[in-house]
Image 1 (cartoon, one colour):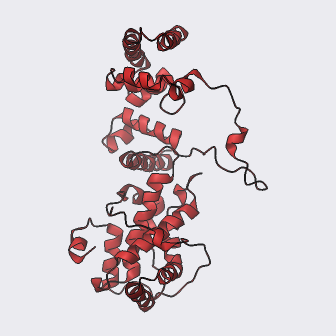
Image 2 (image 1 turned 90 degrees about the vertical axis):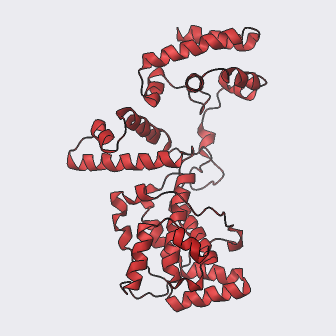
Image 3 (image 1 turned 180 degrees about the vertical axis):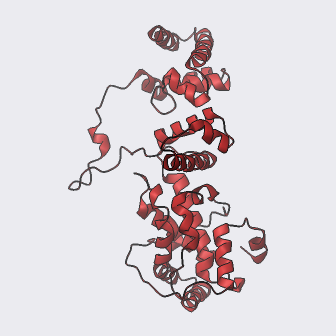
Length: 347
């Protein structure tokens, strides 16, 4: 990243505040704190993805828990110590020096990661946040230019924070939600907490008006939050004595469902071809109702909440889609029988 790119980058309010504070001499005296925590095993494995435009974190920072993030004082190696190691790394391209830089700035990573602790989930805990923070620190070290005229810790603050928020967006849920969906959910969560604190109850209609959303959209996003926010992987270890025991071993091994056989059998290509002839909404509704989205069959009411319509409207769309499928599947007895059995069971 050169100086011109720095001038064109999207401004981050926290980063800009630190730049201003540093110019005014308002930052506290800094000191060296060396941590014994495990760091990235091979710093050279951290590749530069070229993606400088990470997740927009305004929604995260607007939550009450993170209001004081802007006042965090950077406690790390002194200015001169960082510059010496950075210069040594530049001259020798020495991974050992880079690794030492990460160790010496571990406290900075911890301070930033600690403000996201409440967003930890079963599959993305605080140590995962720390590891993403270290990756951000390494990227900062590789991109930092001594001619920037700013402290490395000030520059690294931005990269560490962005790396952690990217990790939260990518890995904190088993089913990855798009970034824009997560941002909307975070805004809704903030409003829900405000209402619970001020009124003791939640009014989704008011939240929808305040966030310029429909009430149906708010309900759908809250549904996504409840469904996907804290899912636990079946590969998660269970107990303390046997690290090889996983949650999945306690799930009953039922005979594979018809849906599963079709999804993984020879008929999958034919079903895909049939579904491609439906409209987008018809196809999505059939996928939800048959359990082809995530292995769970959704009720008419659940699908209705997703689309913001009544269960009767979903039933009508589904019935129309099934009639299309029946007509197109008449030359394939297995698929035709499966669809007809489903229709008979529903009726």
